[in-house]
Length: 246
Image (cartoon, rainbow, N blue to C red; front, top):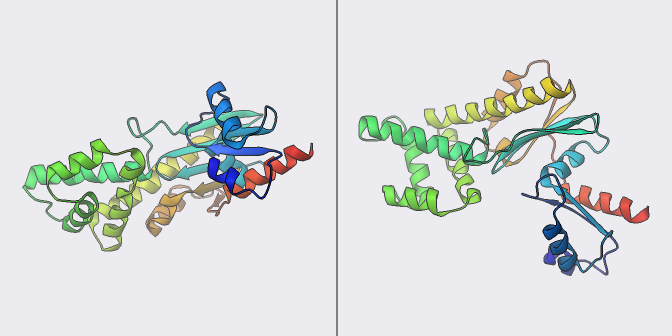
């Protein structure tokens, strides 16, 4: 937040933020952090969960559902002013189709194969990519990477899985398809609960491998699917400008 303040050409009249992990409600402690970081007073700022900001960026006029797949995964929409969120419960519970989910599920399948065969039989490409990403083929390297790092770093393993899929590894390819199925499930849940509307799929996972998008499209025939490139920072600036002018 300080970097944004320091990069501003002058005093800030209003600030809007989309904050990862902020939840969906205001928090007194976070209010104080924002005021201190930007040197602004009460009433000169607003913030939301980063997913709410992403939804506004994808559908500035409303009327759509969004599924985001990056480090984590979540679906979000609004119906009659009520927020509806699906998924987004973190890697300890699910986050299906996310980067962390892809990485951890791929490791699970790889180690089950090693348990059964004594080697990553048929998944040598996946093993090479994952072990290289974690710094070694020994269990100590895997343990240190998975249990000693945060979810963002664990999520980077999805890149290794995608590289293996591009190289033709069958398990990695299957993981890409399963990720698409998981994201389609979130979209279907939003439509079931809030009714038909355009569905925007965003996030880095959508760019990992073409089979992810292909599987989403296969799983959701007849749905209005969109794959926009959003600019959340620009949308935050628009919200702040509108608030400052009121």
